[in-house]
Length: 159
Image (cartoon, rainbow, N blue to C red; front, side):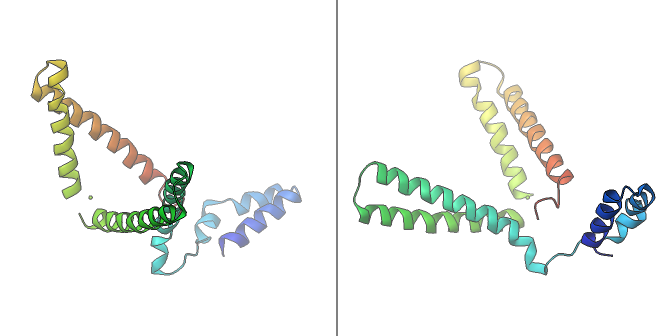
């Protein structure tokens, strides 16, 4: 039974105040039968296209608005808008590709960058470089772990 058919039955039972039919519509077995239908293999990229498109539109509009606010010529607005649009699209596309083929290399490099920035803090704090580096690595790792856990828990909601 499709998800929409099961939902329709549950709504009808609720509208009729039929507690028994409503309970049947909400049993784990009935819920498990209601498989979600998704598009083909290309649907996995839909979320990236939507978010990437929104990001591209917003940043390009912001650049064009800033240039227009500076009252530069129309040709400058068009050139900067088009350049930003193409560069943004290329950047997002390559970023998505690289992130999908490189989450171990990126993880190691991010860890090194966090440690390095933490160690560089000693220029201001006068503490141990090792301690500051490890501290920053742990804080960054914890933040990444929390974000990963939230993403894993919410997986499938947006796509």
